[in-house]
Amino acid sequence: MSKIESSLDTLLAKLVQIKDVGMARLCALWKKYSPQANQYISQLKKMNYATAKAFVIRFKWRILLVLIVLYAGSKSYDYVFPAGKKAGGPQVITSVVVEKKDVPLIIEATGTTVSNSIVDIRPMVTNTVAKIHIKDGQEVKEGQLLFTLDDRNDKANYEKLKALADDAQKQYLRAKELVDKNFISKAGLETSLANSKSAQAAARSAEVQLSFDSIRSPINGRAGIINVFPGSLVQASNVVTTATSSTATSSVGSMVTITQLNPINVQFVIPEKDIPIILENKKDDAPLKVKVTIGDTGKNTYEGQVLVIDNQVDPLIAAVRVKAQIPNEKLEVLPGQFARVSLNANTLKDVIAVPTQAIVIGPNGRLVYVIDKDDKVTAKPVKVPYEYQGTSVITGINSGDRIVVEGKQNLRTGSKVREAKSSKSGPASADKTTSTEPK
Image 1: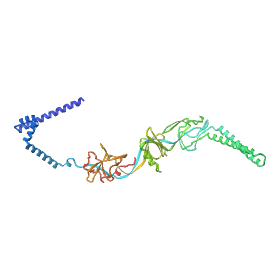
Image 2: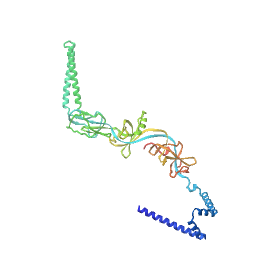
Image 3: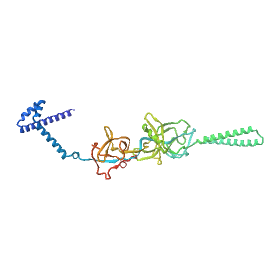
Image 4: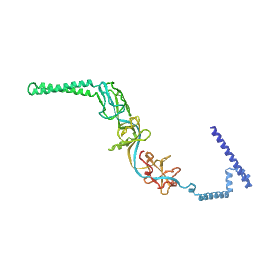
């Protein structure tokens, strides 16, 4: 504050000095050209309303003559130097002619990639691992053999029960022949049939138990890290200890996890205000289209479609979850990666779209400068219901209007403008100056 005060004091001192010098020079000139200067100066110092009135009445013709000279000089100056020349002529601008067209309504969001299917491979029986048929990270097919457990006991039990089932079936067929010859009663035949069915059911149960020793993949996908080795004892359990989130499922105690990577899903959220837009277009048979960019580089872009829109809004974030699916033939995308999503939610029909830079934000809202046939501009207020990547959909002007895009500085209603010389073909169309498709 001390520097500012010292600067102000210096400025005031200079102003006082200039005033004193000016007064001194005026007094010198007055003394030179008027012998009554001292008298007039003393009278000016003592002047009040009465003396001022008397002075005007005394010198009224001289005062009138001075005013006439000043007025004539002002008019002569305006005639020699017109206002248009003083202002520097029309302002150079670049303009476009707006037209109605269809504009895709794009909703942008961020999300994460999610596997389409994740399966934790766990044993159905308590047994020892005899052989591992896959390697870490290997691609597997549905039904492919993954692990073989020690099946000696289960195989022997199955063979035993299968033999008993075959013998019971033979006993039933023999009893059937004896009934035809009336050697045994029908009750004995029914008992033999019951024994045969019971033995066959026991054999099938043993066969199922034996199949648990051969563990196969239920889906197509990629195997994760194998958590067992030949000779490891695995225990049957139906308790799944997992940590599940929207991005992945990590398991504790599984032999291996099979993750389906092609196709892969992308999960993201849509704000509550945009839900009516996507639901309105969801009524059609055609699915909603998405463009997904993986990572921060923006090089890997995939096109897919929306699978499902959740049936409830999360009140904590005021948004609804959406899941889309994209192809992943090269298996370059893994679950849990960051993704940018552009959702083509709807199409705005027959709207006026202009470059966003043509819109001026003023104290009373947004406006554009419309050029009339005389190359004069008029500021017209507009509303912007939608804006995306340099293009704005506006209301308030008509199709075919020519608006200013560049050179809006210092424009006012009634200002004269002219098109920039660099525009060879004249005012361009709004369709040629901007693109509404997402990049």
